[in-house]
Length: 103
Image 1 (cartoon, rainbow, N blue to C red):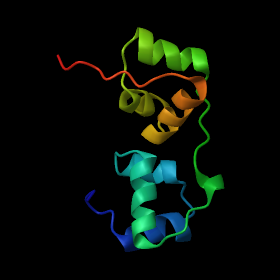
Image 2: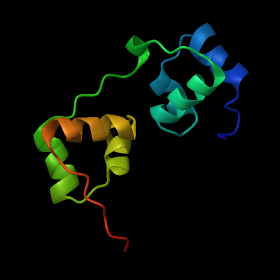
Image 3: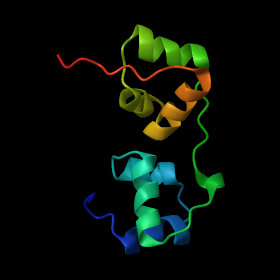
Image 4: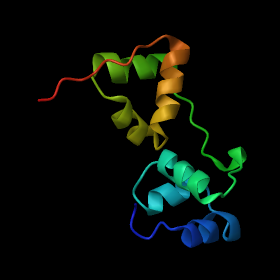
């Protein structure tokens, strides 16, 4: 578990202070998917309007993943979004996840 990211802290930051999932993820140096998973586990309902909207166009995603060889995780970090956001965009554009070779 991310240090300090317990139910009470997440409740205080998200519900009481009105921080976004992305802001909280940045505070704990993780991605928004981690925060979403914790919220679900803790029974904290998330409002989709409080997620950071990320628009990754097809040409950018193709360039980063296929030409530059970046993983979906690396791309998610660039856009400060969840890996699932990148994989959903890739699926929408018909881009297959290419497993990267370890160096």
